[in-house]
Length: 86
Image (cartoon, helix red, strand yellow):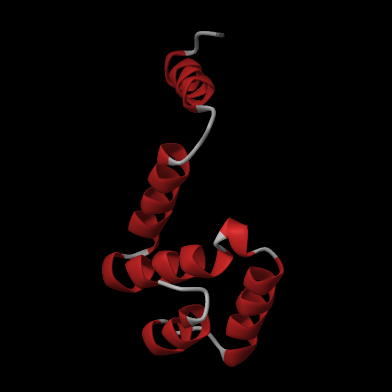
C-alpha cells in the first residue's frame, strides 16, 4: 500500500471517524517512515474481523518481527514468565 492510499483505505475499511482518520493521516505524512497509517489500518481491520485481543496480539507479533532488539525482548519475556532476572 502506498502512502497515498492510507486515507482512502482507512475510510473504506475502518469504523474510524473522519477526525480520527485526519489525525492518523497527518501523523503519517509528518513521519512516513514510521508507517503510522499502515499500522493503524492493519490494527483496525484485524480488530473488526477478529476482535481487540487478536489485533493486539498481531500488533505485538509484528513489532517483534521487525524489532532490532529481538534477543533483548526474548530475555525480558523469559524473565517475566519464569521470574528469572536476565
